[in-house]
Length: 216
Image (cartoon, rainbow, N blue to C red; front, side):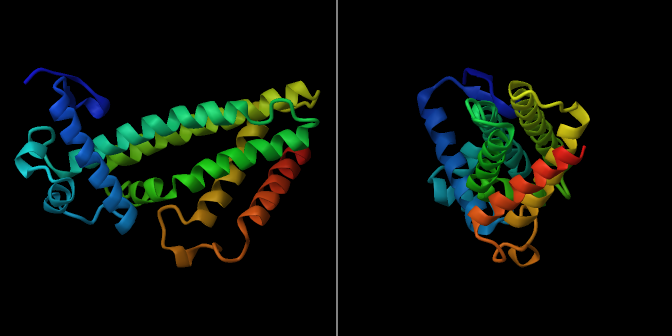
């Protein structure tokens, strides 16, 4: 079967039928991740959900661990591009730096919220899988760079002095609070998820980031 290299280093078949088959597998895995919140499901469940034989799945990957890594690579590649595009556009045209900061915070937090069901299981699996952890960290680092660059661009546009280090620290504060609220990688009961409405959280996050920058 003719193939080409795809996401995660796994060969991607040129035949449309094979691509369609793996697309069903991918959709099945994403659905199970959404339902379970972890990687606790079997290849047999994936096979049944996708209506694709286990033999066909093994024709692409060596087992469930590699399948999850492939799915993570594909989805995180997509998410990295989306994050870069949306966050880079945030704050442009804002009337002042505080408004620009609010827009950057809202956009990035919104992306994390929209993709919570994708991100959280991989946070959990990264505890025991070094490859999944490393891929997650690459996306985290990329997201930080995008966020910091957006803040620095906004600061420059509004005549605000802002160092790289201070922008990075503002991201660390924002990201830690946002991840905790969304419960990424932990049980929902371990988060203040019900303590604030989403709009209130965004207001608090913006205020925290802006005050962090102002005090720097």
